[in-house]
Image (cartoon, rainbow, N blue to C red; front, top):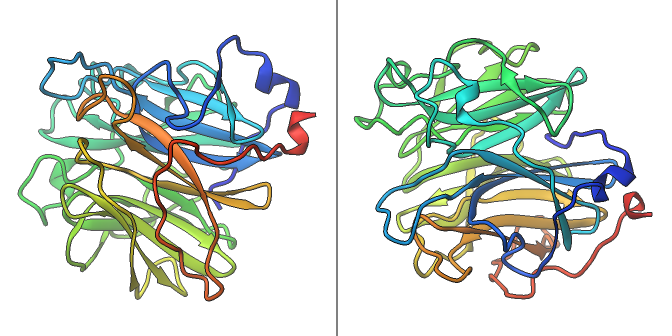
Length: 320
């Protein structure tokens, strides 16, 4: 599973900036592309920071930022664990696009979308740290995925949105893509592929693949169509075959993207996403939010409405 981090409970409240928030949960910054994981009663939430002004016509994303919570209501700003400049082979200025994180053999691996400096197009790098708050350093010195490695789509941004998953047997997988869904097994070192890159044939896939497991079933959620809704498929295997299950979150009013992450925390299930609900929010000024949900009796995920209230407090033992 992608649930990993080790931190003393007192450290959750050590940082100065604590957001006591309903949705959006991080009201001081425009944030997007949430990635979340859990361990020892703490949620670690990584987001990209939207730095665009109200007149900018493109994303301005200079860093990823980390927040933590022990109750799903109060979020502590833990600073920036990594910036695109950590990848020296990347352009490294304003391209902190979607990322994901997991833990393996006592180290934290951060898979990130950046713009390659010499191979045209988006690329995926992997950084490593001994602590969830970083600092993270480039684990390879080169990209794990470059645009010339996947030729199924004639666009420069088809290698984005990495989602990393470690199964119960220890096998790790990386899913990613735009317009074409791709995946590959990872070696135990987490920095190399163990075999070929595979594609998954499916209609209306856009981006943001995210794999999680619940009661023995694999759930592959993703952004569908454009403007995007959140949909999902299920399987008895992390590599399919997949059964389409439906849309679980409707598209945003102003923002064309939505980008989900799904976790279990302290006996409850949650979905993170982004929308446009902060004042002056919009396409390039997004806001991370979260909702609680319950799986249906048959294991399917219900349709989840976006709310202003967000989830109720769910304090874990780490809060004490």
